[in-house]
Image 1 (cartoon, helix red, strand yellow):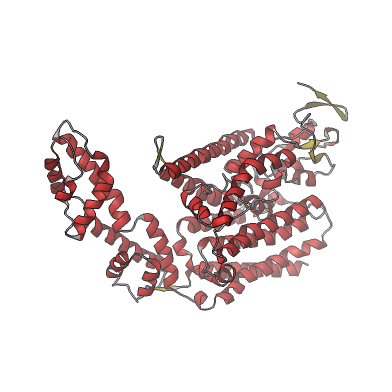
Image 2: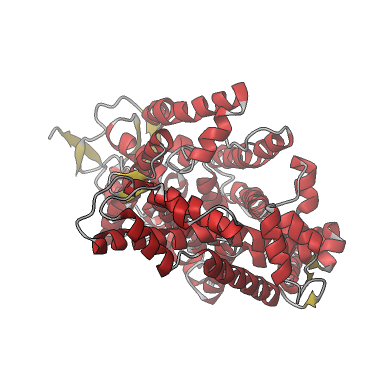
Length: 593
């Protein structure tokens, strides 16, 4: 068995090495076809091709060098467009003289005649951004000139780059598209071979390392876990966390550098949805594999507990079917991408304008998806939490919880059990929920009124901040990258707005609780050690007190590791959930307070 484990470890390391090394195995050759494929506006295509002539059809040896050249091209184009289309001081002076005390938008036609393309552009954008000045009376020429300069600044900051150049969002998408279309590498020539040499070796190696555990006697064995360099923030855990953090940063913020990895899964994407892979297809593929492989480990590790076996099978099924396969099949059928198990506010973009428009324009199925999503929020969540607690979602269905319970299981003992951590957790998780509610209200207000401002907040900026800092940095970079550093439920404890919503209902209106038999507790501390949500379970067990904490996800591991059967996950009448028992010998008496 030891030989099998060593062989498996070596195969996994080999596959992991090839995967990381392939990040750099590519040359890049920018072609006219790649530009036309990536930039759909013909005028912008021509601008880009003109500035890119120096590197067109010339091999570039690394993705970093290639992206540097592309970034310089965007910068040059934007500078030239700003020079060409910026409204000059002379033009502002002429507008001010024509307007006298009362401004008329008709005067714009006199200054910016539509006889040539540049003047026509200025005419249109000034009217778009300066329409609010129409018929306004100004007390002095200086006041009018100040307002005109403000309009000119808005034109410069927003209109010219967005309409005539390349804004940062367009640059990000085009850089990625150009890098993928321009890559020349062994991976592109034979993606299936590299799939086998990377993911294939990692899966086989992990299986050989995990499966021998079946021969061990049943029961959880965590001997020396706090001396393990991977499982107690040792050097191996720090390296693992660092790799995960770097991976997520590249995935969310710099996908143009990971094109070789994305090319590798193109055949699988084309088989499932009929299109080339994107960065989130790669992520979904890796995510699903991690849950499946580490789910097998979870089942073997907790095979003495039927609850753990069925719970693990459930998260494996929901991730594979609902989060990965069904959405890809929907794309093949030209239907909206939709994860039927994802619920707002975890699915924070559910009410974004492009999602609502897409669902409304997709006929009966789209309307059903919209209704399904709303029904989950207002009906399914309170009803299921009332009967089963938040565990029905967080530990049986959720993809975030599925990854935490499988890939993150070796790190559950690292969760902070201190009172300070609990206080921070309550403020943070409910703060994110409040942020999600405000952001969604702003987005819906914008959608129905067509105004970008909600009270004193720009709704587009608000959702950008939420998406970057909560959806990407917190949920991804920190939420998963910190597994080996702070435990496997960092996101669920401190950031998930859906966990906060579920927890509020579980705390005050639910039949679920973990009951304790305090007379049997030997204070071994296993329950607290392995609580991934940072609950000091032993504190409750020693007092024979029910555990009804809103953060509890009902994973049941505290019960599984208890040597005396003190803890039980139960669903009973609400009466008595908040009873405050005291110990009297080996029994307890409830005090009605």
